[in-house]
Image 1 (cartoon, one colour):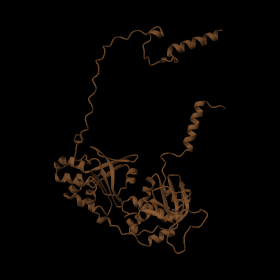
Image 2: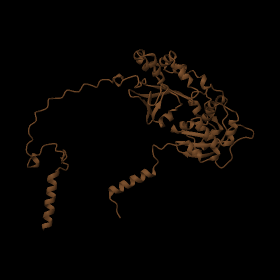
Image 3: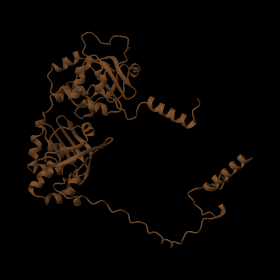
Image 4: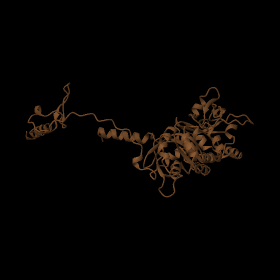
Length: 405
């Protein structure tokens, strides 16, 4: 059976869509490691420290996993969850290192930035890996390690999706005094100081002058997400803020906090209504989280604000900058929303000609009006021209003539 050309093209396209991987399909480190029970502890703590969604959000990444025995050695140090996150972040390389690339390293070592370096918490170059972990190692040989050494080395590749994600096993936890150093607990966090130092000083100063600052501070240990308007944004809003009552000011400030920890990846996946510190009942003082790809917006009934940056994302606290002040419907009418810029004045149109009754249909193609939607006219090179109705009539006449012969 011979397929129609159009059907053949459709069939080929359908087959390609089935065979080719989806462009939107992302890797999932939790699912990858779930296939290897000997890495269950490492997998578990990637979830607990919220590193798993950060790994999944990266387009190019290498995860240096250790088995359960190596994780037991790490857990025996009784590090805080924050220090533990730093240590595991050191095992996430911000580049692709598959087995083939490791074999091609000619000088024995290589330098790679890690997720620990990306947090900004790593002093100096302590967030980089320069170690025999990246040494060229034969897949059919034992790890290259000297008896008594604590150096971690490449063991084997677990899964590779070039050049998206590589998951490899290393022999030991990477030693790092900087990553294991005690980190301040959440209650010691200077929230307003953090905001002041990163472009949200006006909002931070307003918090300090209000009882809302205590509400924010009291929620840190249990989990807190703050959406902080940038200085120019909140400064331009200040005249309206000054006209609010004391209770309204308190509600507006608390409206910019959520009493749970929400990482950026969690906000992207948890679209929908979200309660705030100002919420005092069902559907009161809430807003809607929505994402479009990597862009996350917060929608009230009055404005839509976009998350523009991350000041802190360390469980249990996240602080993000936004490009508008969040205006709750309970305090503002829709008419109080910022007025959009006026649209450009329409270009004056020439006066339309007075309409006249349409002339009767022309009897010949030469008399047909230009631009008839049913016509395909010839170009200057003499391309094919026909009038739809007359062409069909001529074809039918010829066909009937042939039948009568």
